[in-house]
Length: 541
Image (spheres, rainbow, N blue to C red):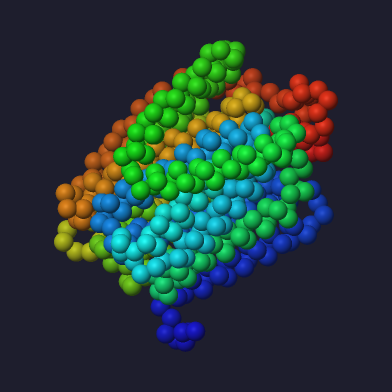
């Protein structure tokens, strides 16, 4: 244990993170022990999902903060190759929720899907702790690819489905829905911030195995919370119909087979690119087929609104996700960090979300009561404009031969986080609110699918900052940031201009809640609850 008189900024940051984690755990324990059905105006189930996802994000973002450095410094990939691998990995993390969402909708239910995904994630994060001797000739690199594959498939079963379960706690017309998703989004960023600091700190000061090992412990904690908190879900996330054990285990076997496939894909970015193109058109075609053959005019136009919103994901996340790749490397090499490990700066974004999410939630609710709240598509346009401003401000601070002042790292994350809060929680809420009930998890999966495309694009943009020889340069990176900044602002303005038309497609004035006692009763005689039917849940206004 280092003497406190010798602590540097990184040591103090890690200590503060431990204290903050202890505070949130104490609050969670008090909510869990309370006999009331609600806490702070929301059902207790929201807070259980809050803490389960908090620990999952602790492990995921903690590992992600180290990944680009692990690739370049331990496995000795070039900058360009590392950002391409990073892009393929994060893209696959976001594409697998399409499969996980479909299997949950049709067979498992969201709760069992989340549980299975959590088990795979725990193994994946723990396998990351096997570092071997390093270099691409080390056979241990195959354990590394296996760890990434487990995390990819585990995220597919968990990610979309836990977000759907948040929506199942509320009626469609409940004015608390956007606030609930923003609280949920703030909660998972508590885990992201603390995990990034602690995992990054241990990984870059004590050794890779310490950081990745802590990430694995965090995922195990999330599993424990989810299993013990089942009762506060009040039926949310249960299977749509009784499921034979043989079929259930067959689905789990499919998940394990998918791990083997992902082991191959994460090493081949060209194949990932082709899969994204083919599956993207297939998914679009399937959604449009359902819209034109099985939906009436208003729900069909809501699907059109959904498609417009999700089509903006690749641009937003392709630019935003430079954070873990090219911006992470740039911070390490060209920013005056005062000796603080670059991975710790990945915590700025989730910390901003923790600070700003309540402000945004309050502003949306205040404007909503006044009838002045911007529509979801208008918020998306604002998000893209803020994203572009962040890049342009960063370029301004980086010009010249001197190291970039650390202030501009905080500024780019401020604008990008403000943009994220105008898009991500709003998008999650819109997907759950506008999607037909029988397509809920599939639509949420489509949302994450287009985020996958954005993450792959992010890897390609990051790869371009490496130039022909694969090594990043300050000048090339800033030139690319300047260009994408202006593109983002231009598209944002265009989105705002067409937002009134998209808002009309949403038909918010005719949204109605299904009768919770009648929904899903088409399967007569079945004792198990249909998905989304919670007869023990009290209706909320």
